[in-house]
Image 1 (cartoon, helix red, strand yellow):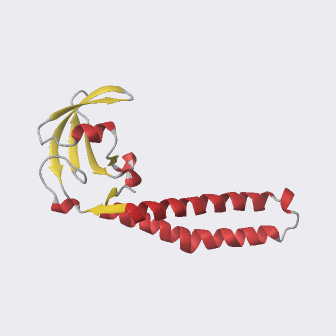
Image 2: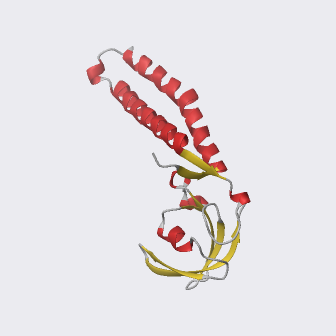
Image 3: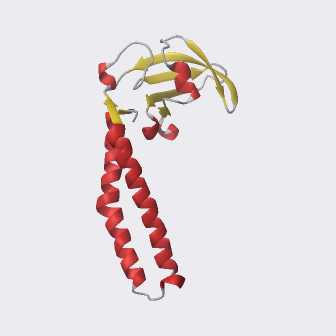
Length: 156
């Protein structure tokens, strides 16, 4: 199986989520299922069916997280430098709107664009990889062609 690149903080976030699912969510849903069973006829028991559905979701997420974490290759960005690569925090300016943005290039499992965590496989991240401070990049996005200039690259 392929290794999944991940930052230390991303690994810890997923580890924490897994711990919460196993220690809190799983026991809570088991209690809910037991309580719903006490209400009698399971064929017409909406609480029971909802709890079983939630249990399926929780168990699926636990398996997914265990798989991701077992294949994770934790990369420490503080040991890197130079052009843009995995783990880099990149300060960009949109050359059309002058809007500035900061993204950290991270693995797929930890990506969250709202928090500035850019998926390594996204069009923007792929365009940035290998570029240096001062370079311009052209990116085809769902919203059309965009141009960005790299203002700074940090590894933190």
